[in-house]
Length: 208
Length: 197
Image 1 (cartoon, one colour):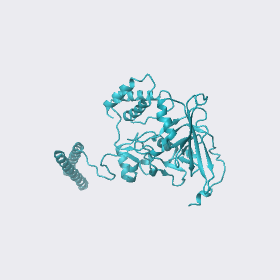
Image 2: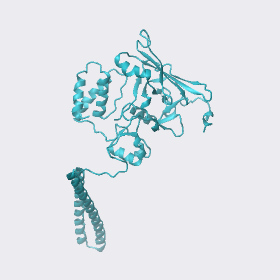
Image 3: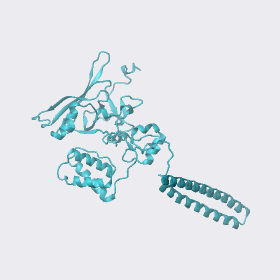
Image 4: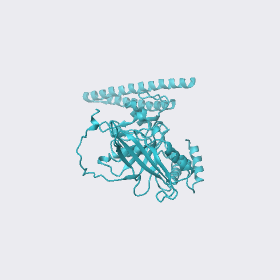
């Protein structure tokens, strides 16, 4: 459900707010509650709980200006993620499920795919993640910063080596310089890999 | 294995730590039996009278059943029925639908009249660690309506409907719904009410 659809539905329901909601309206409110607030609406025997839920939905949009972030994974009704060997036995339902949690769980327990009603198209447990071009460019920016930092560190240590007055200090600085140079090599290698990935993603994009 | 069910495995004593109390909580969940993913049901490894996980098919959900009054689901009972080779159990759950009209008849009553259901009710008696709280009816044979009445001058239902759901031939005396702890079970139970698209 898109934000505009949610708003239209809210306006429609507002028009019937002063009378009891029928079963179709109640279903719409349950759906809105899940889509907008990201929580499951639990109806009770109270008289006004659907009216209260609609008010909560309206207030959520007023305060957040957007709908709750949704995971690309959905568990079937009755299914939860709960294993003592996964994230300290924390319990996950559709209300607090994130893509990272779902992927982590399914990578560890691929047979549990049966618990899910929705997984991103083409996604399989254990599959290597391919970033988008935008994500790869963000990665490049970060990698460049890391490389710049490593190069600055090398320059500083080189100065220390030159200024070292006794042999012990010089030896220590040279050891640090060796490590710093290794960091530069690693950062450069990472940057090269990202550059290759960007080139590949760009050519794929151009081919489409 | 075939001998196991004919043997008792513990003393017959009263649980002084968690004394039994009668009755049911006023709410439960009713599920169309055909919406259950039976192949994915997980039973407790040690106690086969406990269902750890009950999964519904994609897009399916359970529905709340809420009863009012001091004795919700009054008349709910399980009876053993003597069989030729093996004794079985009959579960009977009366549900009052305190409403009448085209919507409730289309969405609830007609379905109850002809469908087959699984019902999870909450015992007032929770037992040690909450293991006795949630009891499942209709898992094996399904609950079907054995009586459905709309008595216009009934003082009990005020002109609403009274349905009795019955499961016959259940192989086990009772099935419980429990996963790890009371809190985890409560969370899992609530997820039955929302269809996953």
